[in-house]
Length: 219
Image (cartoon, rainbow, N blue to C red):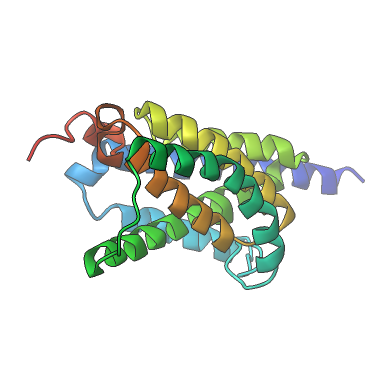
């Protein structure tokens, strides 16, 4: 009679070990492998994809399907506007923001950064949070852990670490209710642009993380 419970507990332990191993690989790639072994990130991505197959994930469960798009947007975007509107007003008041017609280069940068944010949300929510929701019974606990993981990969930047801890928890709470990453990626894209423009260059270091934060000014 106890076998199902044992299997469940064992499954949670194994999933927890999987999460720890993949996250350790992510940190190693940020702090070392990207310089010594620049293609090793492909192995990490392959491990994540293999995990999806083993766990029989679907496009909906990882947040890539169109389902719940509107519900996710209606929940997360008003919350993020509470943060972004004061930042925009501050930017215009201090002259750091202005109305200009964006050129092709700015548009290309926005699209590429948006794609990067989509990838980050897929890995953060579609993989790590998806797995943690299977380990912890409380979605609030898993959301808090995802926020810590999301912030940790932005060390040692003080501004990015703090911003991603807050945003990571909000995004995770939304994802736990509505499995869709696209509004989260949009919110991260806009927030990232505001942080890049408004944060002091001496603290933001061109949005670098890991060792690049210390050597951002080198050419």
